[in-house]
Image (cartoon, rainbow, N blue to C red; front, top):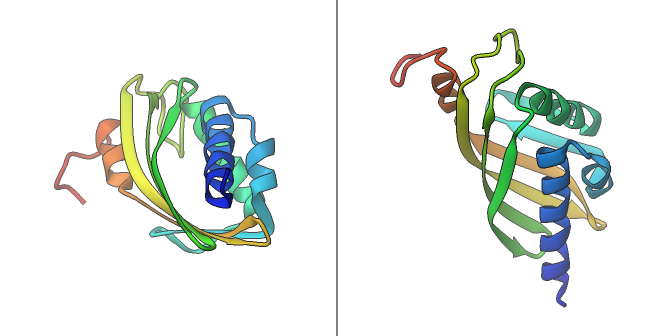
Length: 142
């Protein structure tokens, strides 16, 4: 098995454990203690503990959440991960009470590895798709 195959398996296993079951030990082991997660709404980024808390908060709001890793492209110490997630909004999230709506979102994560762990990720997805699916905004509304 190649290093890329091993890395790909590590990513998929950590994502499935964390996002689908709320078991974050594998994700924590995959992330550097100096990890930063950058998004369009948070250019300063989240550290490892903040990101793991986001996973737990998201799982609480969407207890049936599933995330599928659609594709991983690895080149050297970089991985591009295309994914989609879906679940039912059964508990409050960021001040939004449960809507009992099914939500589907997709995005991509660009990860940089250093010494075998992820040091940095840049995540891109459209949070307006989530808000629209929850009925908070309509498409085309800011």
